[in-house]
Image (cartoon, rainbow, N blue to C red):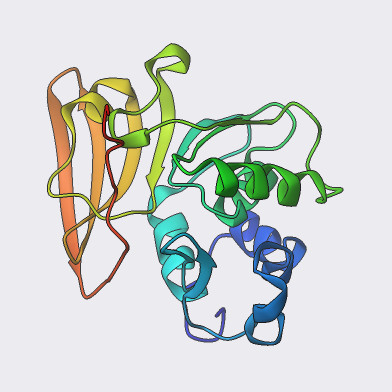
Length: 201
């Protein structure tokens, strides 16, 4: 991916080099783990295409020491990449609404020897409204498509913070410059599973 210019930042390049995608796919998908395609992880969900994740992380620009909210953490790959980047002084809050995937992601991240214990917290909850208990966040990454940017997520972003979130088939980038001042850009040509709100029944 470096050859194609998708990966430019040293910390992100190092995370991709140290966090192997094969640890986050189902056993029957291991032979395809290096392919630049999304792969099923069960329950109608996928692990994203590596190129897409590289683009999202370069836009997000996570740094050492940051507190990051990872919504739709799935099998834990983006969570592990983020944890590697923010380091032991950082924090990644991973939200996954499907309990089996939340457990799968937690187990997968625990296998990563480079990630210090306590850097990542997993919560089996509906992430569509974020997680205000740990706000504000320096960065928010959403890995499932929405119909718009939820106000709750904007509210939970620190001033100076950045968010990357798929809206329909666009990748939406936000930078919070003031309490109600957001700089926004859109990048077309992406496809994600939808961010599903958990029903109250």
